[in-house]
Image 1 (cartoon, rainbow, N blue to C red):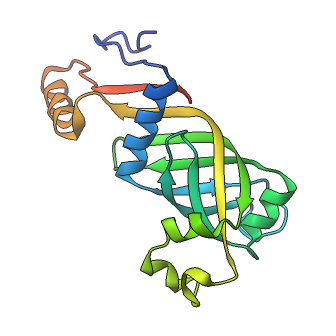
Image 2: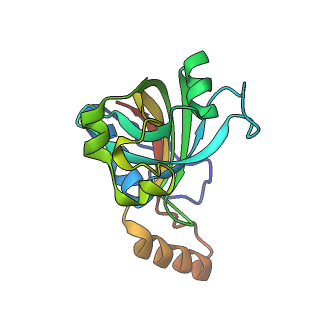
Length: 178
């Protein structure tokens, strides 16, 4: 699919599946692991939206997030496991939207694997805090918006486009299916 902008000379649509989708997800989450994590709003004051940090994207493409077992997030996942995650890696690129199914876990070995000292801010008893739980998000599909050649090249193309009056957009976007 070509751009609807008739001045856009480049192809800017690329759907990704399987390992290519997983690579893109890893790349974009690597830019920023913090997302807006959305559940169906049932119990909490945030209307089902809260910032959360992805601790790991595993080999199968599952996202792992540490959460408090007594949180609104966990309560809402228990009622409806469908979740949406929205990421922004930089001001002009590295955007990602994912749909998935969340499951809750208290796997102590996985908690130990994902633990970092900064988590003690929320879990004051350390990695053995009884409130620690894990959210595993799987069956990912979504959409991404990025640039083809990095932010520097994209910026140069924007400047050249402004100078010449031609659209030299370096963007790329597409569906993701892991």
